[in-house]
Image 1 (spheres, rainbow, N blue to C red):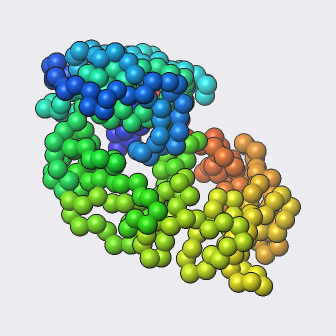
Image 2 (image 1 turned 60 degrees about the horizontal axis):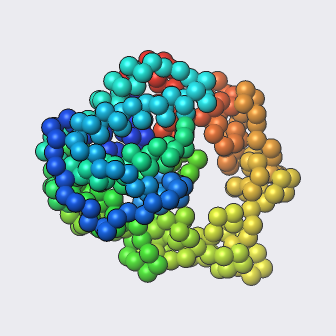
Length: 339
């Protein structure tokens, strides 16, 4: 993927995945859910597709062109505020060009009600908080391409109940379901609210062509267990042998009672991997050590990143601000004119 398209993908996420081509004033159906709940737009599980972001009901937007104009203005305003927090500025024209380049193909069904709710929900966000994507924005433009069939964009894939669809690396529509306890599963995922990213690890057989994947989320206190079923993460003191996983803040440790889930070591305590505070150096007598400050030397090996949250060890061997989040990535590229 080129730098430009990595950037476009990140801005598409900020736009809620809902910027679509100006294919006229495509009409949509009426509201089918009996009215969406109002209330504040507080973010729930931010990140990967199923995030439980509150929906604010807004007036229908009659035309696709009107929606596209409004969402472009809204996204660029939020991105400007977010980038300003990071000391980055850019021109409105730069942002508009970038957002417009995320347009999808024509021939999609436009939903005026979802468009109104998307805009109303997005307007409750400020700055980088806008990166928590409202699910309703994915319903503004929808396609009818079935799972396993060829596609060009995510929006062309027909939505499925309780899951997220996308156009996969093989250019066919694929889907992911969020697993519940006891569901057959294909892997474990964790949503990171700090970067609005989702990190997944695979396990179990891949689904047949045209069938959705099911992932268990640690944010739901679940993981894909040895039997390839979603099961609860193990609590403190519980048995974690045989591939079982511990809850957040715990690690699987050997002791007199076998392998059990125990709290991560605190600052100054002996460590072998992660720490509750600081990082664990890679040495025989390692203890949890304070993170290295930005600009500090970070050469040498460590079991966990020595630079701490929102930072990474750069090529020069010093801790640098990380651009892992989509917002930070876009801001850094806009600052350099890299699109």
